[in-house]
Length: 124
Image (cartoon, rainbow, N blue to C red; front, side):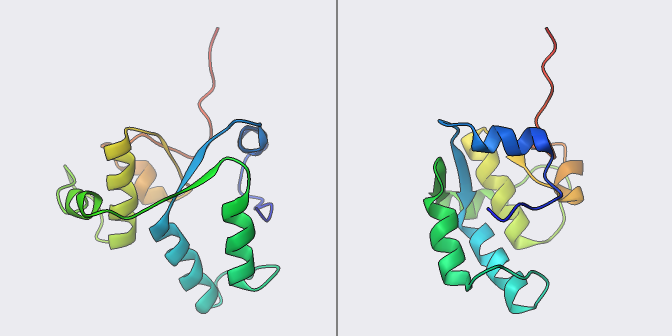
């Protein structure tokens, strides 16, 4: 939404491709709001306006927090760190059986979710 330089060009092109669907966990919205609150992230406009624009972006789908996801987050296999927001995000990706695009090194290191920091390259 605001051109984060940490996103690869390949990922930017993918996200801007018409028809691409991207799920955003509701807990991720809370995390962004907390980052803004603690001045760890600065947005180009008030957060309410930023969210309205970001969630209206073509292909973006807000994914609700459900009781099933909440319970699954407490039953993650193996060893995972104790950040409850990350646990919820990982549980959602596992339940939906979809890849999780993230730059979070702890999630990327967790072997029980398909976490990607960029799009996988295809070999032909």
